[in-house]
Length: 237
Image: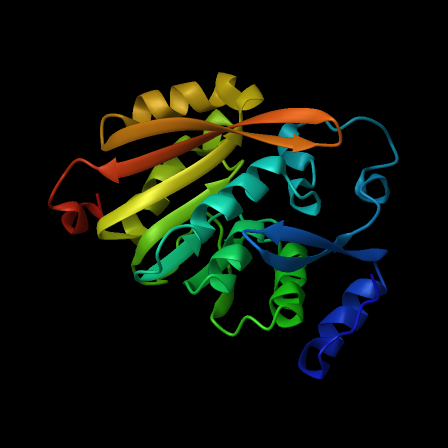
């Protein structure tokens, strides 16, 4: 697909194209086509010296994860009502889909490179309701409150469980809901996370299947709703 860049984001495109080979992947979400700009060669982003020593070192943001596509389809079917926050967004698939279906969205990640890709994708899709912010879960800026929080493949290491819970407490508005999507293969990490989350949240879990390239991906969607009616008072807990 030919890349036609809107003039306002041309400097960002020039910066990225000088470092990455770029491609646009069109995703069909509930009858709409959403264009996702991404690096075309993941291998080029991996270290030359050998295998990664830690899972955290893998550039997760460069891939369109199957869970993000399923989450995008799910959130596209949710009636817009308030603000949506995407955590650990990577290429921002779910957040961009939410914006395409009428939600006011803030898309966040800790990696500046992927945020530039999201900015370009938002411009390519003419999504004016998208705001892009850098967010490190260990240092939570004031972004306001959100009626919906979403995240795909963001539960990948136990060391970040408490940071995620703190983000939920800070950003979720009273009466809000959290939707998470993960490949069923992540259950070894997801299960203990959901076990801990059950202390604060009412949980509902469902499975959706996504067929891609003759393979069926089993995706777990988790819905978390705070148990406490005084949720706003927990934001600084």
